[in-house]
Each structure stands twice: as structure tokens, then as C-alpha cells.
Image 1: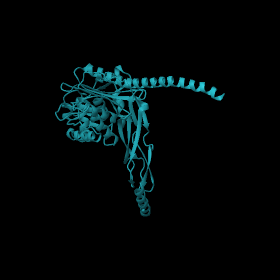
Image 2: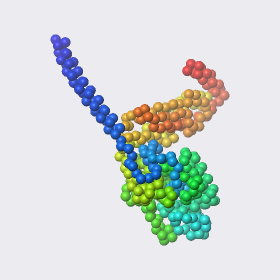
Image 3: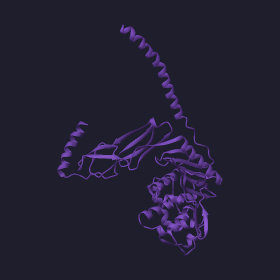
Image 4: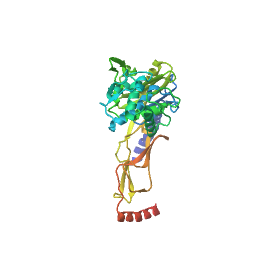
Length: 395
């Protein structure tokens, strides 16, 4: 009786199971297909471009991104970075009165129209450099920070090296043409990300639409500030040899993107290209936070220290940017230095965390100590030396 009653039920389950399995597999394959059907970036009439996610630093689109190009006034982003650093450390102050030199006054190109011998506050010079793109204001700031523009250029190169800008070199502060003065689109995106990240209190200047000085009001040359409410910066550039350039940044919901276009033949093309790249990024990519900063990801054994456990994490929040629909394919693996001996200093690297999208490596980030672990006393070190010997022997 039971056997006869169960058999039809088993047959029915098998009959339903196979079609349902097929439907499920078909649905999953459809999801995968949709996730992988990301179109290529738009074709835009510029010499070079990159599109970067601000949170993760991942590049979403790239055309000759590491090729050295003439940056024109995009240079002023590095000038600003060095000035902001001097402000942050207290070397200079916003209310400092800067005497305008003849060299600054005579600098060719776009101007704030400061007068030679006059005194202008650093705050006004910054607005003149950022909003009006004044070369005179830029040189005046460089001289105030470093004494001379030549010395200031050395500071610019030092910061470029520290930030990992491998295809950049500076000979002047405003971005005047020079064979040894160049940047790449990728480097510019790295710099822009660092500027927003390191000086959030200074960044709002880049969304100011106009500035008036000496009874002369000039408009910000970044027209995207007028046409796209999500755009809040950052800088235009142009010379005959460099073409029309633009660095743009926009934030929609919790995602911020940075676009760099270099070498457009016409002014309107730099805006059209930038808008197309930003729209592309927001339409087809998403960012996910994987780990918070200064939060333990793994805990490692540390020997000969005043503590025997060392928490490891990341200095900045760890994000990943992937095509929409592919977030479930993201995985992380951690590797830790096999033997860690005290002392350990906070932020000292002892491993790395690798992020993958499927089988493709997306990023590597150092795992750093989240606290100091001083060396223990003589007795503690001796005990740990014995324990470490046996640990090594059996492992």
C-alpha cells in the first residue's frame, strides 16, 4: 500500500524537478548574459580619456590613459594640491597677504588681473586660480609657498611621485607649454581623487560658478556645472597645442565618478565627451563597499611582542566597482606574512587583500597593522623564541 502510494509521488516530483531545473538554469544564464552585456565606452573625439570610480579607484573606461600629454591648466590641480597641503600644515594661511611680483603679473595666458606690487589674500588668489584659471594668481601662490616658481615645481614633482603619478612631470605652476611638462589622463584622475579625498574642505571651490576681483567678474569655464546638477567640479584647460581638456567629477546617490578628457579639437567637444563618459559610468557600473577602514579583517599571530595578536585591516574603506549585476561574482582573499616579529607599527603592511571579479583580479590592497605592538621584555622574547622554534618545526 505504501509503496503504491509513494511511487506516483516520486514520479511526480521527478517530472516537475527536471523542467523546473531547466527553467532555473535558463533564468540564471539570462542573468549572466545580461550582466555581461555591458556595451563598450562611447566613442568620443579626444586624444585621451579615463573614467574612474572615486571610491574604489577602478578605471571604468580608458583610452591612452597612461600616455604623456600636455595638460595645460589642468596643471593647476597639482598647484592647488601643494598649496592646500601648505595650508593644512600651517605653513601659510588663507588671510596671508601676498605681494604680487612682476613675474606673476606678466605671466601670459588667462588672468585674474592682479596688479604688480599689490597685496592679495591667499583666499582670493585661490579663487582666482580655481574659478578664473588665472595664471598670474597661480604664480603668485607658488612664489608665496616656495619662494620661487622653480622651487615650487620641485614640490609638485615630489607630490606627484608620492601619489604614484608615473607619467607626470612639472616645470611650471600654471601649465604653460614646455617639452618637459606633461601629465597622463590616468595620473590626472589619481590626483583629482587625492585632492577630493585629502582636502574635502577645499574642494567646494571647484563648484563656484563665478568670481569677481578688481571689478572684473569671470565665469567658471566648466559648463557642466550649469548643465548637470550632479557635477561639482573640477577644472578646464586649453592651449593651442594641448587642445581642449576637462576634468569633471559628479556624484549621483552614493557614487562619485571622475572623468578626464584631453585633447579635444573644439571646446564643446570636451563637455560632450565628459558628459557621455559620466552617463556611461553611472548607467552600467555600481560600487560596493567590502570593508571599512581601521576595522579588523584578519588577526595574525605576532611574536616577541607585548601582545600576541595583531589585527590587520585597510587604511581607507575598500570598495570595488563592477558592471551592474556582477556584484555576486566578487570575492576576496587575504594573504598574511607568515612570521611577524614585534615591534609592529600602526599602518605597517603585513599582507594584502586581493579582490577578484570571477577569475579576474580587480585590485590589491595592503593589509596593515591597526595598532602598535611594542617589543616585549627579555623574558617574553625568550619564551616566544622557544615557541616560535617549535611552531616553525611543526608547520
